Amino acid sequence: MRIWYQLLSSETGMKNSIAATQALATKAAALGTTVEVRGTREGALGDNYRLFWHYDVREVIANGLKIRETNVAQAGKPGAYDAFVIANSLEPGIVELREMLDIPVLSFMEVSCFHACTMGEKFALVVPNKKFVPRYREIAISYGLRDRLAAVDFVPMTNIRDFDTVFTNATAGDQLRDAVLTAARRCIDQGAEVIICPGPSTALMASRGIYEVDGVPILDSYSLLVKIAEATVAMHKLTGVAVSRKGLYQSPPTELVKKAAAIHDIGPLKNG
Amino acid sequence: MRIWYQLMASEHGMNNFVAATQALCDKVAAPGTTVEVHGTREGAYGDQYRLFWNYNVREIIRNGLEAGTSGQFDAFVVANSLEPGMVELREVLDIPVISFMEACCFTACTMGEKFALIVPNEKFVPRYREIVYGYGIISRLATIEPLASYENTRNFNQAFVDEKQEAVCIAEITATARRAIDKGAEVVIAIGAATALLAKQGIYQIDGVPVLDSYSLLVKIAEATVGYRRITGTHISRKRMYQSPPADLLQRAATIHDIKPLLKGK
Image 1 (cartoon, each protein chain N blue to C red):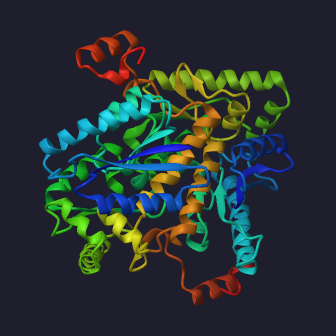
Image 2: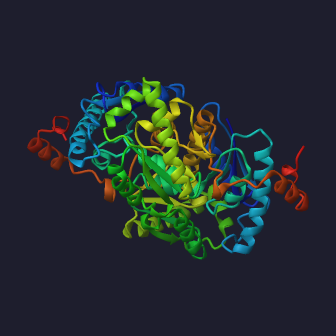
Image 3: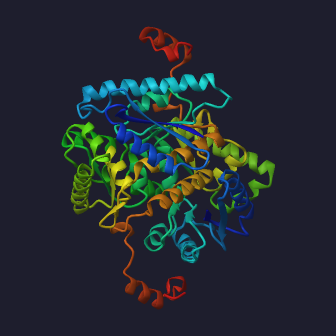
């Protein structure tokens, strides 16, 4: 099984964060599963601002479409990908790629939020900074989980790239760990039974083997994503079904794909 | 990995269904995973009536306590869609307790905007709606459609060995799924024996709409959950909803109610 595991982080600016995530994913993977953790060229630079995030989304979509193209070329041969994991919690390109890809497209937030709902009545999110709070609340509510969301709290990482040093500088790592635990405790006071830490915080906590605070689970979301991706791929192989093509994830007709590809110069879609 | 997989169905009254479910589980289980499908003594007999259902729940709780405290199993799967004993068992067991409905409903939400349930008969409709409400995702539910011919859910059993009966049953499930699709369903979850019957025939879509192979999905989710637990040591929150009773209360209650698997030193 081969899984493309897409972070938003810059491969140059956040290489330590990416390496830590790769280590977690590799450790979680079953025998025979290869997880390829990828970042972006310049992603996660001020992506708490929607405009900058928008540019990152373009790259994630481009990567997803390249995977689609690879899979068409490799059909029936080794080298094809079995799943595209959107390991960034802001779900960049999730609907766009589910519409177009014939392999499962997994979402960090769907997997984490729905799994949290099986572990307790209420969950909370500890997000990278205050600006992000409304966006993450919006995502959980869009799933229908308003009543299961206890709180959205934050740590003071205004520049997401500052996360990178926490993996190499022990003091910075300790400070972030403490900030996550403090925010998590505020969430617990508001009724949270499970904590989800979108972004590199989850990698830091898991890398340090911290899976609970005051008896409340802190999800190791990156490892969980690998296990759920494996399960989803197995179901796809068994049933041939990855997603519903009725309604939300309906694919565009081939002729429209070709026309749109020509208009927007979308190379991987030029043949429909 | 060893999984106790608990159906509500009677092991003698619905033996064909239980056998078909075991075959589905064996097919999907990863190498090294053993799934042991169990029914009950007299379950799924009029269980749309809450009183009769309550007697089935007792047996499942007993099985769960015995299996879950034996040290022999990595997960207890509540493979019945009415979630018998789910909270009770999650409170006291230290292995993952997986729920049919949680696994199906949450997975369906990743496959489309709206899902539907096909339930065995009309009496069941409010109960299943209640479960989805409980998850908080009622806005994702397109409809709940009942089958017409299964007032007694045991009537499904013959369909697993009689081709004519099977064809009749599948035709009814298909027609019911189409009603659900007309009402906006993008994913269909067929409850109970209906899901096993469709999967046995390799029917995973109706008119292009996915019909979950729920029993296979449950195995994969159980494997994922056990795998995750092995990494993190966590599988449940003990804060509030699934908080375990204190040890002394557990022992007193176990003594009063004669709950042998919970008695210390057992």
